[in-house]
Length: 200
Image (cartoon, rainbow, N blue to C red; front, top):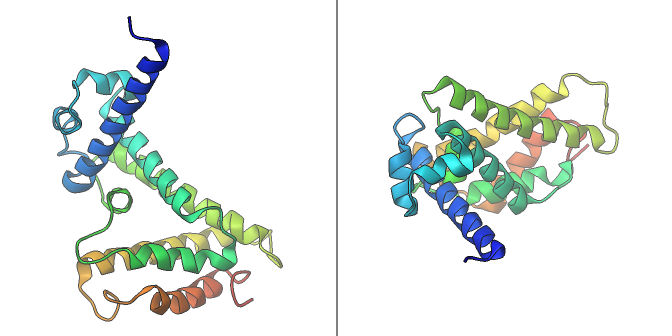
């Protein structure tokens, strides 16, 4: 008989395999075209395990988005607003003509499914809300400024646009700019949109 700890390890491994396979499939094929059978095959597990761990394709997609955001958060840490431009520059500098990593591709790609897109928009909205909260907590911030969320969303939109153009646009000098070249303009962008940020 298998010990409970071994079963937990196997369950965690299976769940991780499904998440990894699903993230690649959703990023490459889109939500509508990716099938649970293909995802399970890529993961090397029985398709019935998707229902056991994620309930549905929608649940698996939501778990992929949540894991993508968690991974990005682990990479960037909980940084103050004055360092946001450096975080964006670090992430953008890793993007090239070969495309965005699957976690970013998930956030950028419209799925063709309204519920899946609603989940994706919710994840992006939460990211902007965290940025707005960082702006509110920065020294000298105006916490009653109800335009902060819009400005935070604009910073997020600009950041994702940089990622998109670096991966598919082929525009120079943006495509080949390194971290240091990107950091200065990004600092100015964040400072202009969120005045309590760097330079203020």
